Length: 211
Ligand code: SAH
Ligand code: MG
Image (cartoon, rainbow, N blue to C red; front, side, top):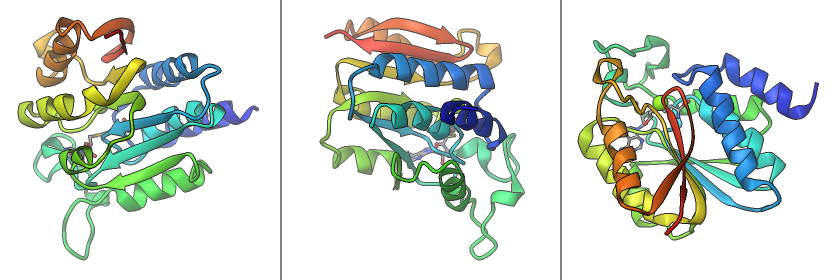
């Protein structure tokens, strides 16, 4: 098996909320976009346990790109105790808080992607305010509440270079399937005239910057 087959198979085993077909679309979108354009800077907002980082990292490795994988690692609202996506095995027994950083680190180490996928630990907006490097690929999959989703959109999308990719996860056209903010920021990206649609798979949208 090739290195990329190994990584894509491994990604399947990592905890998370990324269906395989969407993960493969993430991988292929990044790979096709980067083709020949080595050394890019990519960033994902929302790392969790590293599943999407393995899909994107598999493509980054082939392009000598670096993927920054950003998270405060304490989970979103729906990951907390009493909510739909709570996983008690991710609670730190020392302070009782959800902490996905050790799992994320083990994932990236096991995938042997430690020189390709670099963790950024902290609140998305604080990092964005101090992050000046233009992005060739941006994947938004952080907090899905209206306030943070819009703030991520406003803080991070201007950093995408013309010709670069913007990928957004959990875009649900039908409100029955999930919350609105990711869908709303997707629409805003299109309506801004700055981004156009390239591809979609499930709730993943792939756009490119045109202006
Ligand atoms: N992309 C991951 C899943 C991310 S889940 C995958 O597919 O595998 C969403 C993540 O966003 C959670 O881990 C949560 O901790 C993080 N998050 C939510 N709000 C955040 C914020 N304001 N700053 C940093 N991370 C945030
Ligand atoms: Mg998601």
